[in-house]
Length: 514
Ligand code: HEM
Image 1 (tube, rainbow, N blue to C red):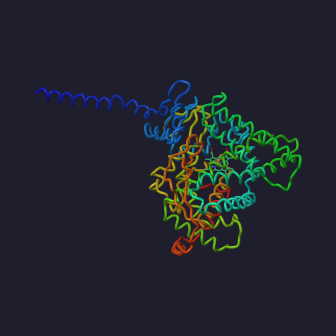
Image 2: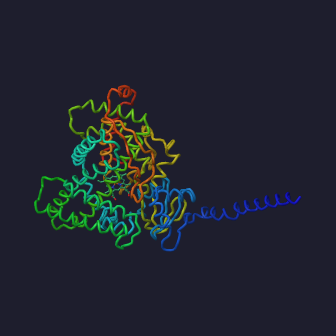
Image 3: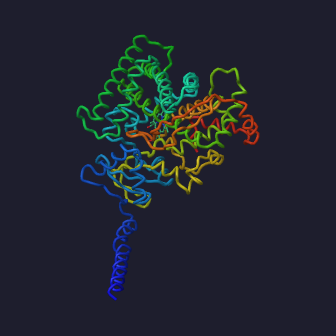
Protein backbone atom coordinates (compact mmCIF):
# COMPACT_ATOMS: atom_id res chain seq x y z
CA UNK A 1 0.00 0.00 0.00
CA UNK A 2 2.73 2.36 1.10
CA UNK A 3 4.84 1.61 -1.97
CA UNK A 4 1.93 2.09 -4.38
CA UNK A 5 1.19 5.51 -2.76
CA UNK A 6 4.84 6.44 -3.33
CA UNK A 7 4.56 5.27 -6.91
CA UNK A 8 1.46 7.38 -7.62
CA UNK A 9 3.03 10.33 -5.77
CA UNK A 10 6.10 10.22 -8.01
CA UNK A 11 3.87 9.83 -11.08
CA UNK A 12 1.81 12.90 -10.04
CA UNK A 13 4.93 14.96 -9.40
CA UNK A 14 6.32 13.97 -12.81
CA UNK A 15 3.04 14.90 -14.49
CA UNK A 16 2.99 18.29 -12.71
CA UNK A 17 6.57 18.97 -13.73
CA UNK A 18 5.77 18.05 -17.32
CA UNK A 19 2.72 20.37 -17.36
CA UNK A 20 4.76 23.18 -15.81
CA UNK A 21 7.44 22.85 -18.49
CA UNK A 22 4.83 22.66 -21.27
CA UNK A 23 2.57 25.51 -20.24
CA UNK A 24 4.51 27.73 -17.89
CA UNK A 25 8.13 27.67 -19.02
CA UNK A 26 7.86 27.05 -22.77
CA UNK A 27 5.21 29.64 -23.65
CA UNK A 28 7.59 32.34 -22.40
CA UNK A 29 9.89 31.46 -25.32
CA UNK A 30 7.01 30.90 -27.74
CA UNK A 31 5.53 34.29 -26.83
CA UNK A 32 8.84 35.87 -27.66
CA UNK A 33 8.57 34.53 -31.22
CA UNK A 34 4.87 35.31 -31.58
CA UNK A 35 5.46 38.96 -30.70
CA UNK A 36 8.29 39.24 -33.27
CA UNK A 37 10.42 40.25 -30.36
CA UNK A 38 14.18 40.36 -30.21
CA UNK A 39 15.84 37.08 -31.21
CA UNK A 40 16.24 34.41 -28.51
CA UNK A 41 19.66 33.83 -27.00
CA UNK A 42 21.79 34.94 -24.09
CA UNK A 43 23.90 38.07 -23.97
CA UNK A 44 25.88 36.60 -21.07
CA UNK A 45 27.58 38.75 -18.45
CA UNK A 46 27.57 42.56 -18.43
CA UNK A 47 30.32 44.02 -20.65
CA UNK A 48 32.02 40.77 -21.63
CA UNK A 49 28.86 38.96 -22.75
CA UNK A 50 29.69 35.43 -23.88
CA UNK A 51 33.25 36.30 -24.94
CA UNK A 52 34.77 33.75 -22.56
CA UNK A 53 32.65 30.92 -24.03
CA UNK A 54 33.50 32.10 -27.56
CA UNK A 55 37.23 32.16 -26.81
CA UNK A 56 36.96 28.73 -25.15
CA UNK A 57 35.61 27.37 -28.44
CA UNK A 58 38.29 29.21 -30.45
CA UNK A 59 41.03 27.65 -28.33
CA UNK A 60 39.53 24.14 -28.38
CA UNK A 61 39.87 21.46 -31.04
CA UNK A 62 36.18 21.91 -31.84
CA UNK A 63 36.89 25.30 -33.42
CA UNK A 64 35.11 28.65 -33.14
CA UNK A 65 32.08 27.49 -35.11
CA UNK A 66 31.18 25.12 -32.29
CA UNK A 67 30.09 28.17 -30.28
CA UNK A 68 27.59 29.05 -33.02
CA UNK A 69 26.43 25.47 -33.65
CA UNK A 70 25.63 24.92 -29.95
CA UNK A 71 23.49 28.07 -29.80
CA UNK A 72 21.70 27.36 -33.06
CA UNK A 73 20.69 23.96 -31.69
CA UNK A 74 19.47 25.58 -28.46
CA UNK A 75 17.68 28.66 -29.80
CA UNK A 76 16.90 27.97 -33.47
CA UNK A 77 18.08 29.43 -36.78
CA UNK A 78 18.10 33.03 -35.61
CA UNK A 79 19.64 33.84 -32.24
CA UNK A 80 21.63 36.51 -30.49
CA UNK A 81 24.72 36.53 -28.32
CA UNK A 82 27.31 39.09 -27.23
CA UNK A 83 30.99 38.82 -28.12
CA UNK A 84 33.61 41.45 -27.26
CA UNK A 85 30.84 43.72 -25.94
CA UNK A 86 28.87 43.79 -29.23
CA UNK A 87 25.47 42.17 -29.74
CA UNK A 88 25.85 39.54 -32.45
CA UNK A 89 22.89 37.98 -34.22
CA UNK A 90 23.28 34.88 -36.41
CA UNK A 91 20.82 34.21 -39.23
CA UNK A 92 20.80 31.25 -41.58
CA UNK A 93 18.20 31.51 -44.32
CA UNK A 94 18.78 32.35 -47.97
CA UNK A 95 16.16 35.13 -47.71
CA UNK A 96 18.13 36.84 -44.92
CA UNK A 97 21.36 36.30 -46.89
CA UNK A 98 19.80 38.15 -49.82
CA UNK A 99 18.38 41.00 -47.69
CA UNK A 100 21.62 41.53 -45.79
CA UNK A 101 24.31 40.92 -48.43
CA UNK A 102 22.59 42.46 -51.46
CA UNK A 103 21.46 45.25 -49.14
CA UNK A 104 19.02 47.01 -51.47
CA UNK A 105 17.52 48.81 -48.48
CA UNK A 106 20.92 50.26 -47.53
CA UNK A 107 20.27 49.22 -43.92
CA UNK A 108 23.51 47.26 -43.55
CA UNK A 109 27.18 47.95 -43.84
CA UNK A 110 30.34 46.06 -43.08
CA UNK A 111 32.14 46.71 -39.85
CA UNK A 112 34.89 44.80 -38.19
CA UNK A 113 35.41 45.10 -34.48
CA UNK A 114 37.90 47.77 -33.42
CA UNK A 115 40.61 45.28 -32.49
CA UNK A 116 40.58 43.75 -36.01
CA UNK A 117 40.74 47.23 -37.55
CA UNK A 118 43.81 47.93 -35.40
CA UNK A 119 45.49 44.83 -36.82
CA UNK A 120 44.68 45.07 -40.55
CA UNK A 121 44.59 48.88 -40.44
CA UNK A 122 41.60 51.21 -40.51
CA UNK A 123 42.25 52.05 -44.19
CA UNK A 124 41.79 48.40 -45.17
CA UNK A 125 39.00 47.50 -47.56
CA UNK A 126 37.65 45.26 -44.81
CA UNK A 127 37.06 48.15 -42.43
CA UNK A 128 36.30 51.04 -44.79
CA UNK A 129 32.95 52.84 -44.65
CA UNK A 130 30.59 52.69 -47.66
CA UNK A 131 32.00 55.57 -49.80
CA UNK A 132 35.61 54.93 -48.86
CA UNK A 133 35.12 51.24 -49.62
CA UNK A 134 33.80 52.05 -53.11
CA UNK A 135 36.93 54.09 -53.92
CA UNK A 136 39.42 51.53 -52.61
CA UNK A 137 37.59 48.59 -54.16
CA UNK A 138 37.44 50.24 -57.59
CA UNK A 139 41.20 50.84 -57.44
CA UNK A 140 42.02 47.31 -56.29
CA UNK A 141 39.54 45.56 -58.61
CA UNK A 142 41.51 46.78 -61.65
CA UNK A 143 44.44 44.71 -60.44
CA UNK A 144 42.47 41.46 -60.69
CA UNK A 145 42.13 41.60 -64.48
CA UNK A 146 42.18 38.47 -66.64
CA UNK A 147 45.72 39.30 -67.79
CA UNK A 148 47.09 39.59 -64.26
CA UNK A 149 45.39 36.31 -63.29
CA UNK A 150 47.05 34.70 -66.36
CA UNK A 151 50.50 35.88 -65.26
CA UNK A 152 49.78 34.86 -61.69
CA UNK A 153 48.68 31.36 -62.67
CA UNK A 154 51.86 30.68 -64.57
CA UNK A 155 53.89 31.61 -61.53
CA UNK A 156 51.64 29.68 -59.14
CA UNK A 157 51.88 26.62 -61.38
CA UNK A 158 55.67 26.88 -61.49
CA UNK A 159 55.82 26.93 -57.67
CA UNK A 160 53.37 24.02 -57.44
CA UNK A 161 55.38 21.86 -59.84
CA UNK A 162 58.53 22.63 -57.85
CA UNK A 163 56.87 21.81 -54.55
CA UNK A 164 55.23 18.59 -55.78
CA UNK A 165 58.60 17.49 -57.16
CA UNK A 166 59.76 16.96 -53.57
CA UNK A 167 56.81 14.75 -52.53
CA UNK A 168 57.97 11.42 -53.96
CA UNK A 169 59.50 9.22 -51.25
CA UNK A 170 59.33 12.13 -48.81
CA UNK A 171 57.31 10.18 -46.22
CA UNK A 172 54.47 12.16 -44.71
CA UNK A 173 53.60 15.37 -46.50
CA UNK A 174 51.35 17.94 -44.83
CA UNK A 175 49.28 19.37 -47.66
CA UNK A 176 48.29 22.52 -45.75
CA UNK A 177 51.93 23.48 -45.07
CA UNK A 178 52.85 22.99 -48.71
CA UNK A 179 49.82 24.94 -49.90
CA UNK A 180 50.50 27.78 -47.43
CA UNK A 181 54.05 28.07 -48.73
CA UNK A 182 53.04 28.07 -52.39
CA UNK A 183 50.15 30.53 -51.98
CA UNK A 184 52.27 32.86 -49.84
CA UNK A 185 55.18 32.91 -52.28
CA UNK A 186 52.88 33.35 -55.27
CA UNK A 187 50.93 36.15 -53.63
CA UNK A 188 54.01 38.04 -52.41
CA UNK A 189 55.43 37.92 -55.92
CA UNK A 190 52.14 39.10 -57.42
CA UNK A 191 51.61 41.86 -54.85
CA UNK A 192 55.10 43.32 -54.61
CA UNK A 193 57.66 41.12 -56.46
CA UNK A 194 59.03 39.92 -53.12
CA UNK A 195 61.03 36.70 -53.60
CA UNK A 196 63.89 36.92 -51.09
CA UNK A 197 63.68 33.76 -48.92
CA UNK A 198 64.70 35.39 -45.63
CA UNK A 199 62.38 38.38 -46.06
CA UNK A 200 59.54 36.04 -47.00
CA UNK A 201 60.08 33.93 -43.86
CA UNK A 202 60.06 36.98 -41.59
CA UNK A 203 56.96 38.37 -43.26
CA UNK A 204 55.16 35.02 -43.02
CA UNK A 205 55.91 34.81 -39.31
CA UNK A 206 54.54 38.31 -38.72
CA UNK A 207 51.42 37.64 -40.79
CA UNK A 208 50.76 34.56 -38.62
CA UNK A 209 51.00 36.72 -35.46
CA UNK A 210 48.55 39.24 -36.93
CA UNK A 211 46.06 36.50 -37.88
CA UNK A 212 46.25 34.85 -34.47
CA UNK A 213 45.68 38.19 -32.75
CA UNK A 214 42.48 38.80 -34.71
CA UNK A 215 40.48 36.43 -32.53
CA UNK A 216 42.29 37.25 -29.29
CA UNK A 217 41.03 39.37 -26.41
CA UNK A 218 42.29 42.90 -27.19
CA UNK A 219 44.67 43.28 -24.24
CA UNK A 220 47.64 45.44 -25.10
CA UNK A 221 50.07 44.04 -22.52
CA UNK A 222 53.47 42.63 -23.48
CA UNK A 223 53.20 38.86 -23.86
CA UNK A 224 49.53 38.79 -24.88
CA UNK A 225 48.52 37.43 -28.28
CA UNK A 226 46.98 40.76 -29.25
CA UNK A 227 50.09 42.73 -28.30
CA UNK A 228 52.28 40.36 -30.35
CA UNK A 229 49.95 40.91 -33.30
CA UNK A 230 50.21 44.69 -33.04
CA UNK A 231 54.01 44.49 -32.87
CA UNK A 232 54.02 42.21 -35.92
CA UNK A 233 51.79 44.67 -37.81
CA UNK A 234 54.27 47.46 -37.06
CA UNK A 235 57.13 45.41 -38.52
CA UNK A 236 55.07 44.57 -41.62
CA UNK A 237 54.29 48.27 -42.16
CA UNK A 238 58.01 49.12 -41.90
CA UNK A 239 58.86 46.42 -44.46
CA UNK A 240 56.19 47.77 -46.82
CA UNK A 241 57.52 51.33 -46.32
CA UNK A 242 60.97 50.16 -47.39
CA UNK A 243 59.59 48.34 -50.44
CA UNK A 244 57.57 51.41 -51.49
CA UNK A 245 60.57 53.73 -51.11
CA UNK A 246 62.70 51.33 -53.14
CA UNK A 247 60.07 51.07 -55.88
CA UNK A 248 59.73 54.85 -56.08
CA UNK A 249 63.51 55.26 -56.15
CA UNK A 250 64.18 52.70 -58.85
CA UNK A 251 60.94 53.27 -60.69
CA UNK A 252 60.97 49.64 -61.91
CA UNK A 253 58.16 50.11 -64.37
CA UNK A 254 58.75 46.76 -65.97
CA UNK A 255 57.79 44.98 -62.74
CA UNK A 256 54.05 44.93 -63.05
CA UNK A 257 53.22 43.78 -59.54
CA UNK A 258 50.13 45.13 -57.76
CA UNK A 259 52.07 47.56 -55.60
CA UNK A 260 53.94 48.99 -58.58
CA UNK A 261 50.65 49.40 -60.49
CA UNK A 262 49.10 51.28 -57.55
CA UNK A 263 52.12 53.59 -57.30
CA UNK A 264 52.05 54.31 -61.05
CA UNK A 265 48.31 55.08 -60.88
CA UNK A 266 48.98 57.43 -57.98
CA UNK A 267 51.68 59.23 -59.93
CA UNK A 268 49.26 59.69 -62.83
CA UNK A 269 46.54 61.02 -60.52
CA UNK A 270 49.00 63.65 -59.25
CA UNK A 271 47.39 65.89 -56.68
CA UNK A 272 43.84 64.71 -57.46
CA UNK A 273 43.00 63.34 -54.01
CA UNK A 274 39.80 61.66 -55.25
CA UNK A 275 41.77 59.18 -57.37
CA UNK A 276 44.83 58.67 -55.21
CA UNK A 277 45.38 56.07 -52.58
CA UNK A 278 47.60 57.27 -49.74
CA UNK A 279 50.60 55.17 -48.73
CA UNK A 280 48.69 54.07 -45.62
CA UNK A 281 45.76 52.91 -47.77
CA UNK A 282 48.15 51.03 -50.05
CA UNK A 283 50.00 49.34 -47.18
CA UNK A 284 46.85 48.40 -45.23
CA UNK A 285 45.38 46.84 -48.36
CA UNK A 286 48.50 44.91 -49.36
CA UNK A 287 48.42 43.39 -45.86
CA UNK A 288 44.66 42.77 -46.22
CA UNK A 289 45.13 40.90 -49.50
CA UNK A 290 47.80 38.64 -48.03
CA UNK A 291 45.62 37.84 -45.00
CA UNK A 292 42.44 37.45 -47.07
CA UNK A 293 44.06 35.34 -49.77
CA UNK A 294 46.76 33.07 -48.40
CA UNK A 295 45.27 31.23 -45.46
CA UNK A 296 41.83 30.92 -47.07
CA UNK A 297 43.08 29.40 -50.32
CA UNK A 298 45.62 27.09 -48.67
CA UNK A 299 42.98 25.86 -46.18
CA UNK A 300 40.55 25.23 -49.05
CA UNK A 301 43.21 23.22 -50.91
CA UNK A 302 43.90 21.06 -47.84
CA UNK A 303 40.17 20.31 -47.35
CA UNK A 304 39.81 19.52 -51.05
CA UNK A 305 42.66 16.99 -50.98
CA UNK A 306 41.12 15.41 -47.87
CA UNK A 307 37.64 15.14 -49.42
CA UNK A 308 39.08 13.63 -52.60
CA UNK A 309 41.19 11.14 -50.62
CA UNK A 310 37.98 9.98 -48.93
CA UNK A 311 35.89 9.75 -52.12
CA UNK A 312 37.41 7.35 -54.62
CA UNK A 313 34.59 7.64 -57.19
CA UNK A 314 34.96 11.39 -57.44
CA UNK A 315 38.72 11.01 -57.62
CA UNK A 316 38.49 8.56 -60.55
CA UNK A 317 36.17 10.79 -62.56
CA UNK A 318 38.32 13.81 -61.87
CA UNK A 319 41.53 12.01 -62.77
CA UNK A 320 40.03 10.90 -66.06
CA UNK A 321 39.22 14.50 -66.96
CA UNK A 322 42.60 15.82 -65.88
CA UNK A 323 44.68 13.10 -67.60
CA UNK A 324 42.85 13.78 -70.81
CA UNK A 325 43.73 17.46 -70.52
CA UNK A 326 47.38 16.65 -69.70
CA UNK A 327 47.61 14.33 -72.71
CA UNK A 328 46.16 17.03 -74.96
CA UNK A 329 49.00 19.48 -74.25
CA UNK A 330 52.00 17.32 -73.26
CA UNK A 331 54.60 19.89 -74.28
CA UNK A 332 53.12 22.95 -72.63
CA UNK A 333 55.36 23.67 -69.61
CA UNK A 334 52.85 25.60 -67.52
CA UNK A 335 49.12 25.82 -67.21
CA UNK A 336 47.33 28.72 -68.88
CA UNK A 337 44.06 30.35 -68.01
CA UNK A 338 42.53 28.62 -71.05
CA UNK A 339 43.52 25.23 -69.61
CA UNK A 340 41.61 26.08 -66.47
CA UNK A 341 38.48 26.79 -68.49
CA UNK A 342 38.59 23.21 -69.78
CA UNK A 343 38.05 21.62 -66.38
CA UNK A 344 34.28 21.44 -65.92
CA UNK A 345 34.33 18.54 -63.46
CA UNK A 346 37.29 19.96 -61.50
CA UNK A 347 35.40 23.28 -61.22
CA UNK A 348 32.57 21.41 -59.53
CA UNK A 349 35.04 19.65 -57.22
CA UNK A 350 36.39 23.07 -56.22
CA UNK A 351 32.88 24.41 -55.62
CA UNK A 352 31.82 21.35 -53.61
CA UNK A 353 34.99 21.56 -51.47
CA UNK A 354 34.27 25.23 -50.76
CA UNK A 355 30.65 24.42 -49.84
CA UNK A 356 31.60 21.61 -47.46
CA UNK A 357 34.58 23.38 -45.86
CA UNK A 358 32.92 26.84 -45.52
CA UNK A 359 36.33 28.47 -45.03
CA UNK A 360 34.69 31.76 -43.98
CA UNK A 361 31.96 30.40 -41.74
CA UNK A 362 29.87 33.54 -41.39
CA UNK A 363 29.69 36.94 -43.08
CA UNK A 364 29.25 39.92 -40.74
CA UNK A 365 27.29 43.14 -41.32
CA UNK A 366 26.33 46.07 -39.10
CA UNK A 367 22.65 47.13 -38.87
CA UNK A 368 22.49 50.87 -39.58
CA UNK A 369 18.81 51.09 -38.57
CA UNK A 370 16.29 49.10 -36.56
CA UNK A 371 14.80 46.46 -38.87
CA UNK A 372 13.11 43.06 -38.94
CA UNK A 373 14.78 39.84 -40.12
CA UNK A 374 13.34 36.34 -39.97
CA UNK A 375 10.43 37.74 -37.97
CA UNK A 376 12.67 39.19 -35.26
CA UNK A 377 13.46 42.78 -34.42
CA UNK A 378 17.08 43.81 -35.01
CA UNK A 379 18.40 46.97 -33.43
CA UNK A 380 20.64 49.62 -34.93
CA UNK A 381 24.27 48.93 -33.98
CA UNK A 382 23.91 45.16 -33.79
CA UNK A 383 26.14 42.91 -35.86
CA UNK A 384 24.04 40.62 -38.04
CA UNK A 385 26.02 37.60 -39.26
CA UNK A 386 24.95 35.47 -42.20
CA UNK A 387 25.78 31.93 -41.14
CA UNK A 388 27.19 30.61 -44.43
CA UNK A 389 28.14 27.23 -42.98
CA UNK A 390 24.63 26.54 -41.79
CA UNK A 391 23.22 27.50 -45.23
CA UNK A 392 25.78 25.26 -46.97
CA UNK A 393 24.69 22.30 -44.85
CA UNK A 394 20.94 22.92 -44.99
CA UNK A 395 18.97 19.78 -46.00
CA UNK A 396 16.36 21.94 -47.69
CA UNK A 397 18.95 23.50 -49.99
CA UNK A 398 21.31 20.59 -50.59
CA UNK A 399 20.33 16.96 -50.85
CA UNK A 400 22.36 14.85 -48.41
CA UNK A 401 24.47 17.92 -47.50
CA UNK A 402 27.24 16.06 -45.69
CA UNK A 403 28.05 13.97 -48.76
CA UNK A 404 30.92 15.17 -50.97
CA UNK A 405 29.19 15.14 -54.32
CA UNK A 406 30.44 17.58 -57.00
CA UNK A 407 27.74 16.42 -59.41
CA UNK A 408 25.18 18.28 -57.31
CA UNK A 409 26.42 21.34 -59.22
CA UNK A 410 25.35 19.86 -62.57
CA UNK A 411 22.22 21.88 -61.92
CA UNK A 412 22.13 25.50 -60.83
CA UNK A 413 22.16 25.85 -57.07
CA UNK A 414 19.30 27.68 -55.38
CA UNK A 415 19.75 31.47 -55.16
CA UNK A 416 21.90 32.61 -52.23
CA UNK A 417 22.67 29.04 -51.19
CA UNK A 418 26.38 29.19 -52.13
CA UNK A 419 28.14 31.85 -50.06
CA UNK A 420 31.77 30.69 -49.97
CA UNK A 421 32.88 34.05 -51.40
CA UNK A 422 30.02 36.16 -50.05
CA UNK A 423 27.58 38.08 -52.27
CA UNK A 424 26.84 41.63 -53.33
CA UNK A 425 29.11 44.67 -53.27
CA UNK A 426 31.54 43.03 -50.87
CA UNK A 427 31.96 39.76 -52.74
CA UNK A 428 35.49 38.39 -52.42
CA UNK A 429 37.81 40.34 -54.69
CA UNK A 430 40.17 37.39 -55.12
CA UNK A 431 37.43 34.86 -55.93
CA UNK A 432 38.67 33.97 -59.41
CA UNK A 433 42.27 33.94 -58.34
CA UNK A 434 41.42 31.55 -55.50
CA UNK A 435 39.50 29.22 -57.84
CA UNK A 436 42.33 29.34 -60.37
CA UNK A 437 44.85 28.37 -57.65
CA UNK A 438 42.67 25.48 -56.51
CA UNK A 439 42.25 24.20 -60.07
CA UNK A 440 45.95 24.47 -60.89
CA UNK A 441 46.97 22.67 -57.69
CA UNK A 442 44.38 19.99 -58.33
CA UNK A 443 45.57 19.40 -61.88
CA UNK A 444 49.21 19.00 -60.89
CA UNK A 445 48.49 16.79 -57.90
CA UNK A 446 46.07 14.48 -59.64
CA UNK A 447 48.14 13.99 -62.79
CA UNK A 448 51.32 13.31 -60.79
CA UNK A 449 50.38 11.33 -57.68
CA UNK A 450 47.99 9.01 -56.00
CA UNK A 451 47.82 9.64 -52.30
CA UNK A 452 46.44 8.34 -49.06
CA UNK A 453 45.25 10.66 -46.31
CA UNK A 454 46.80 9.21 -43.16
CA UNK A 455 44.84 11.15 -40.54
CA UNK A 456 41.09 11.38 -40.99
CA UNK A 457 40.66 13.82 -38.07
CA UNK A 458 38.45 16.76 -39.08
CA UNK A 459 39.20 18.98 -36.04
CA UNK A 460 39.79 22.65 -36.65
CA UNK A 461 43.06 24.32 -35.72
CA UNK A 462 42.98 26.39 -32.52
CA UNK A 463 43.02 30.18 -32.92
CA UNK A 464 42.58 29.90 -36.67
CA UNK A 465 40.75 32.82 -38.25
CA UNK A 466 39.36 30.59 -40.98
CA UNK A 467 38.20 26.99 -40.99
CA UNK A 468 41.62 25.31 -41.10
CA UNK A 469 42.30 21.59 -40.62
CA UNK A 470 44.23 20.93 -37.40
CA UNK A 471 45.95 17.91 -38.94
CA UNK A 472 46.84 19.94 -42.04
CA UNK A 473 45.85 16.87 -44.11
CA UNK A 474 48.92 14.59 -43.89
CA UNK A 475 49.30 12.31 -46.91
CA UNK A 476 51.57 9.63 -48.32
CA UNK A 477 52.06 10.20 -52.02
CA UNK A 478 53.18 7.80 -54.73
CA UNK A 479 53.95 8.69 -58.34
CA UNK A 480 51.09 7.80 -60.58
CA UNK A 481 51.37 4.61 -62.57
CA UNK A 482 49.29 5.80 -65.45
CA UNK A 483 48.53 2.24 -66.57
CA UNK A 484 46.48 1.77 -63.42
CA UNK A 485 44.18 4.50 -64.54
CA UNK A 486 43.33 3.32 -68.03
CA UNK A 487 39.86 2.25 -66.85
CA UNK A 488 39.33 5.75 -65.51
CA UNK A 489 40.43 7.32 -68.78
CA UNK A 490 37.85 5.13 -70.44
CA UNK A 491 35.34 6.39 -67.91
CA UNK A 492 35.67 9.86 -69.37
CA UNK A 493 33.53 8.79 -72.30
CA UNK A 494 30.70 8.46 -69.81
CA UNK A 495 31.19 11.99 -68.54
CA UNK A 496 28.86 14.65 -69.79
CA UNK A 497 30.33 16.56 -72.72
CA UNK A 498 32.65 19.15 -71.16
CA UNK A 499 30.70 22.34 -70.57
CA UNK A 500 33.36 24.88 -71.52
CA UNK A 501 31.02 27.81 -71.26
CA UNK A 502 30.19 26.95 -67.65
CA UNK A 503 33.85 26.48 -66.82
CA UNK A 504 34.74 29.82 -68.40
CA UNK A 505 32.09 31.44 -66.31
CA UNK A 506 33.71 30.01 -63.19
CA UNK A 507 36.78 32.11 -63.71
CA UNK A 508 35.22 35.16 -65.26
CA UNK A 509 35.38 37.64 -62.47
CA UNK A 510 32.55 39.83 -63.69
CA UNK A 511 30.10 36.92 -63.52
CA UNK A 512 28.39 36.42 -60.17
CA UNK A 513 28.50 32.89 -58.75
CA UNK A 514 25.27 31.02 -59.11
C1 HEM B 1 39.30 29.98 -51.11
C2 HEM B 1 39.75 31.18 -50.91
C3 HEM B 1 38.92 32.35 -50.47
C4 HEM B 1 37.74 32.39 -49.81
C5 HEM B 1 36.89 31.22 -49.32
C6 HEM B 1 37.39 33.79 -49.64
C7 HEM B 1 36.22 34.24 -49.05
C8 HEM B 1 35.92 35.58 -48.86
C9 HEM B 1 34.73 36.04 -48.21
C10 HEM B 1 33.60 35.17 -47.66
C11 HEM B 1 34.80 37.39 -48.18
C12 HEM B 1 33.84 38.33 -47.49
C13 HEM B 1 32.71 38.80 -48.37
C14 HEM B 1 31.76 39.68 -47.62
O1 HEM B 1 32.03 40.22 -46.55
O2 HEM B 1 30.67 39.80 -48.14
C15 HEM B 1 36.04 37.79 -48.81
C16 HEM B 1 36.45 39.09 -48.97
C17 HEM B 1 37.64 39.44 -49.54
N1 HEM B 1 38.56 38.61 -50.11
FE1 HEM B 1 38.43 36.59 -50.26
N2 HEM B 1 38.39 34.56 -50.19
C18 HEM B 1 39.34 33.72 -50.72
C19 HEM B 1 40.50 34.10 -51.39
C20 HEM B 1 40.90 35.40 -51.62
C21 HEM B 1 42.07 35.80 -52.36
C22 HEM B 1 43.03 34.86 -53.06
C23 HEM B 1 42.15 37.17 -52.27
C24 HEM B 1 43.16 38.14 -52.84
C25 HEM B 1 44.23 37.91 -53.41
C26 HEM B 1 41.01 37.62 -51.51
C27 HEM B 1 40.74 38.93 -51.22
C28 HEM B 1 39.60 39.38 -50.58
C29 HEM B 1 39.34 40.77 -50.29
C30 HEM B 1 40.26 41.94 -50.62
C31 HEM B 1 38.11 40.83 -49.66
C32 HEM B 1 37.36 42.07 -49.18
C33 HEM B 1 36.36 42.50 -50.24
C34 HEM B 1 35.55 43.72 -49.87
O3 HEM B 1 35.31 43.96 -48.68
O4 HEM B 1 35.15 44.45 -50.78
N3 HEM B 1 40.27 36.53 -51.13
N4 HEM B 1 36.70 36.66 -49.23
